[in-house]
Amino acid sequence: MNAEPQHPHTRRAFYRRDRRSVRLAREFARAALKDWAAGGRDDDVLLCVSELATNALVHGAPAGRGFLLVLELHADGVLHLEVHDSGAGEVRVPEPSPDAEHGRGLLLVTALADKWGVGERDPGKIVWCEFAGVR
Image 1 (tube, one colour):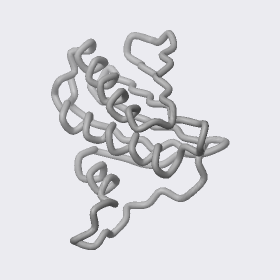
Image 2 (spheres, helix red, strand yellow):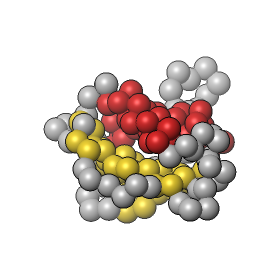
Image 3 (cartoon, helix red, strand yellow):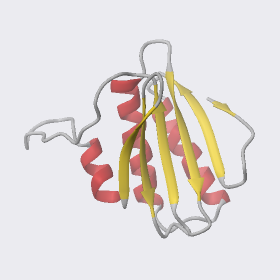
Image 4 (cartoon, rainbow, N blue to C red):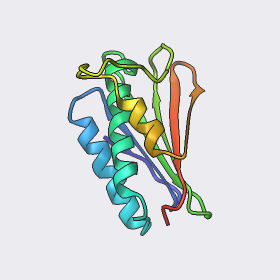
């Protein structure tokens, strides 16, 4: 993980394509929420960090690359979360069969976040979500 200097209400960290990165990203987000005294929706935020980080590792981070996690707490109490990756591909909410073991990450993000979407970057994409009332 590489952390860079940040505004008090913005945190950024880069993670390598490594299975431990999801846990590290979740710990990073937990620490930011604690620093900001933003405990209104911790479980929702941390689950979405896990799901988006996992998706970036599995679908968006080519070998030798990684993903960037960005957290921004706005004055109105809205937390904006972004995961940047350099992989190609379309992001869509799947329709897994009831007995499928995978494929529910974006379903969870859709259910827990107030908003979510996908932005472009070159190369890759940004998957983001927002949570109102975190503070």
